[in-house]
Image (tube, rainbow, N blue to C red):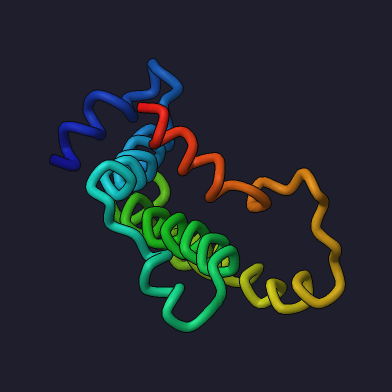
Length: 122
């Protein structure tokens, strides 16, 4: 399969370096969204709701990055750096929670009510 990707995407005539990474990364996230598989549900057991959402989104992206980087021959050598770079900012979450005041227009505020209204209207 890698040979097919290299022949189609890396021959130099079309600037699609990283195409496989992007395709796999977003594909994994879409599969997760449409199947209902959620890291957030696991994290909610040990934290409050919006922290679980933040952590779940970040971890899902890092996981998708890891798989996509290993599959894409152009980015494979950077896979560990991509994962570590994606995980490192997570240590800032306790600092942000302690010292940053969330805006009243923050996306988390009222999300559950809006989603419930949308579902009820259908």
